[in-house]
Length: 121
Image (tube, rainbow, N blue to C red; front, side, top):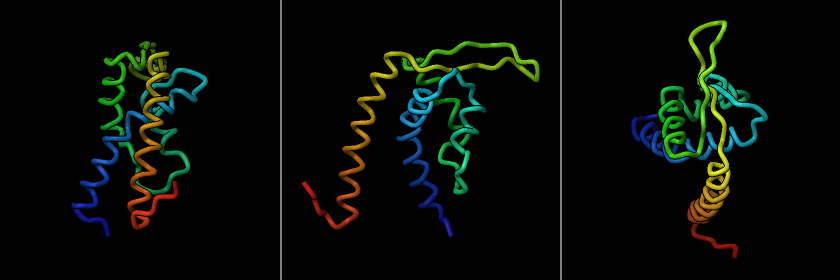
């Protein structure tokens, strides 16, 4: 059973990884994507709790765009309000490479501690 401490811990992890996950998702996409489309892709095939909730998704997308890591284009939609499509920029791709390296280093460190402080290097 999940308790408040678990929820807080999950929220903190998600906040720290959301930007990396969104940059990577848009990096591998062959086309521009809008927020709901991104959310559905992130949820696809994952039965557990969604790692990035839609309420978190949009502020992170805006932040990434404001930082120049994403660019967007608003297009009319035949089924509802206009959609804002996002695409990763070259600066975003460069940032993704650096952030992926930081993530790998962090993951190795945390994994080594969780395994009793063993260091395989």
